[in-house]
Length: 510
Ligand SMILES: Cc1cc2nc3c(=O)[nH]c(=O)nc-3n(C[C@H](O)[C@H](O)[C@H](O)COP(=O)(O)OP(=O)(O)OC[C@H]3O[C@@H](n4cnc5c(N)ncnc54)[C@H](O)[C@@H]3O)c2cc1C
Image (cartoon, rainbow, N blue to C red; front, top):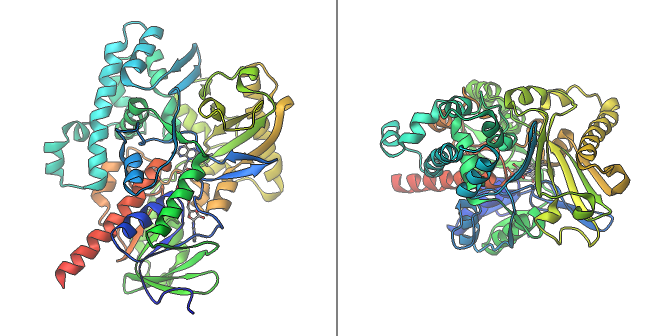
């Protein structure tokens, strides 16, 4: 019996959130789909691992685009529509900001958030509400445009606020509101989740971030991010998707500008009309397309022209006391010695000391996250790959431990507890871990940076011109909706939609 069918409608490379979302949507429409995943389990970064008998979340701090039961946002709704029911827990607060002159905990919901900022900076309520309301209008537009691109004229008619602010940086738009510095600081902590300083961060991206997280709050699955991956993979198989693990795709086969299949590391050649790739375009166009002579020069120019965004350095600890005993009061803490996001962004190019950290205590969002009497605490920064690429193999272990010690030291001083005295288990994830585990280009978890030169509107306009191969789509943080687990799902859906649209077009032309 043959292991693979003679032909599939679609082969998806990578069984993580983006790839599984593509597979689900295609299978739901009756397409014959094969997912090839190099690991022995689904999920990519959306996974967990076990140390000392304790399951530990590998990455997720908080998910966007889920929304409350009965009013789900696009990702929550898509999963439910696909018959996937996740046990969502709402994260109790937006964040605690520990910044120069500020120790403030803010909660989601525009009015609550604005009221809490007003308590810190009296008289700021109306202006903060205006900012948030603008963010929400832009957010609605982005949601529609990410699935249904339209002409510039249509955009201007239907999405005026989006078009008007699209050419401006977050700094430029926020400056027009005349906000006091403290308010600006309190609006800024999430910047790290999108990875550009405010002078270079398109306001569109800031809007999406704020409207989604602050407007609706964030969520985590009770059984960690792996609950999502496992349930998505299970459901995809129920819908008829063939998922094969431990199958690394080495080559995407192409002829005359059209892809027609893949070759795995095991040597299987498998054929399909379409290939959806989780691997970065950088990797696909430099080493995966076979023959490489098929790759047009403009594809290489495109990937060389894009700036890679951030990767991750995370110290994940299981501690021998409860959060309460250790004085950890908030699920999410953003801590920095400045809130000048552009200055902080520059620092991320180095190897530390990192001046802006984001910490999560899972037990404060999910009291069953670790066994009774313990808690999990992670300290994360999101460096650029640049600095880490200079670390030699011989120095790697030393540098990794130095950086981790700095971060643990900073948080120990903040909490007034020496965390080193309380560690039951510790795992240090570096940009190299991410690159090694997921195969992501340079370990970048955030795809290409959203900058003023290369922003979402420009990318919407160039999407067609950047299709260098017929039948080839991409699904991952490197695509239009950008980084994060929620956007990964949206990116996966978009890739599937492109395939379905193309199939329809070809059917109609017959
Ligand atoms: C420490 C950390 C914290 C994070 N925190 C958050 C957070 O709080 N909220 C949030 O939304 N996001 C967070 N993220 C980012 C988020 O995890 C990712 O953006 C998202 O999971 C990416 O999903 P993906 O499907 O695009 O790709 P990935 O998860 O990178 O998966 C790619 C998959 O493709 C497979 N693959 C690649 N190449 C091949 C090949 N050639 N053949 C076969 N298989 C292949 C890989 O094995 C992998 O399974 C965090 C990431 C890290 C590292």
